[in-house]
Structures are given as C-alpha cells and as structure tokens.
Image 1 (cartoon, one colour):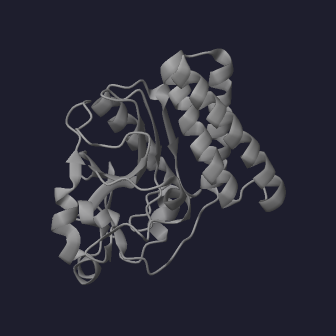
Image 2 (cartoon, rainbow, N blue to C red):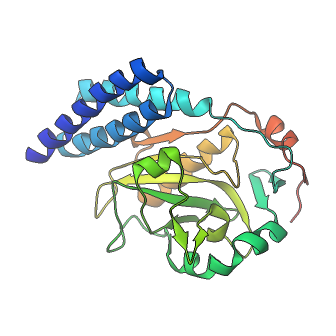
Image 3 (cartoon, rainbow, N blue to C red):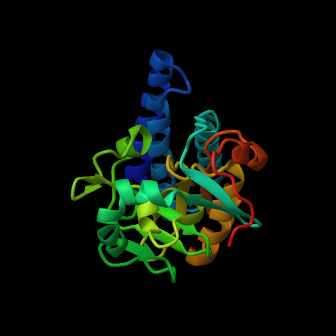
Length: 257
C-alpha cells in the first residue's frame, strides 16, 4: 500500500536520525527521544495499514522501550509543589485551588469548551489524530482530551506556546471544578474514524502522577476506545513509588472526600 510505504520510509529516516543524534548528544538526550517518538507514531501507522508483521512488532517494541527508559529517568521532585494526594484507592491528586485561581482560572472556561470528554470510540469531526494532545483522567474516571493539537517538538521540549488569552494551557484547566485527577499527560491517537492504536505519557508538570498511574491510562483508554491493550504504549515519568510520591508533596492529605 502507498500509505504503508510512505510511513515506513518516514520511520526509517527518523530511526537513522535518532542514531546520529545519539552519537552527538547521547542516547537519552531529548533530541533522541523526540525522534524516537516520531518514529513510533509512524510505525503504528504502518501497523494500521499493513497489519501485525513480526518484524514490525519488534521495531515497535524496540522504539517504545527506548522512550520508556528515557521517561523513567525524567524525575524532578519539588518539596513545595502545589499538589496533594486526596485519595488512595484509586490514587487521586488535587491541584491547589489558590494557585489555580491566581494563574489559570481566567482561561479555564474556554479550555473546558475546547475539551472532548470521551464517551465513545468515535473521533469528533476536526480532531487531529496522529498528533499530541493534553489529557486528564479525572477523579471520577472520565477521560478528557484537549482538542487543540500541538507539535511533537512541544511534546518533548515543552508546551509554553499553547495558550488561551495569553495564559499557558495546563492540565488543571481541564478539571476546574474539582482540580482532581487520577492521572494526566499527553496522548496521540492513531487512526480515524476509529482509533487503531495510541501513544500516551503521564508527563504532567502540574499533577506529576506517579508511575503506577500508567495502569489507569491503559485500562481507561482500552475501554473508551475499544482498543486492545497491546496497541497502547504508555510512558510514565520518573521512578518513584506511590509512597515516595506522597512524600514529595507538601500538602499531603489522605482519603479526603
């Protein structure tokens, strides 16, 4: 198929570029992760066109393992971060209300208007598949995806250019009423009008979900989009256990309703 050949050629170019970047910048550099992320997306498009070829599955696995290892090393703990744990089973993280009001509240209504609550596997008209979007899974288990796309460069190097009325869009703006999530990060959906595969991370600088929430991502996404779990790549940030995570927050509260 033409699409198959195109995506495979693109993946090959990105793979070669990642190898060159690894020599120049190091195997775990952001440049390599950026190129590997793009390669992985192209490979999932090939999988959609061509099916589960064993060699393709091996390439998908290898690219995902490289990204997974790099994300596991991206850990930044701040003792004064404005979050707290308010539930344990499941883990629920809450963003500080005062900080939200000061920084994000003014733009939150428009962010909510631009957010898709996923209640069926069908992709909304105009939604950009194959591109990164912010998402949260709120404390009630709802999957919410910001409809506005951003670039893979922003996914790796930061989303400061994504703004509403001059306010940088942040994950708490998708849940302004309760400011509570089970996890949050960035998601890429492959395929339309039905999702074929997806690539998801838990990279949220505001909620900072621990690695265990990757399980929540996989379960909720598989259910909402009716996609087999082996077609969902999930990358969790940092190597903290939930207990270590709780110790890194400065307003720890347990089981508060």
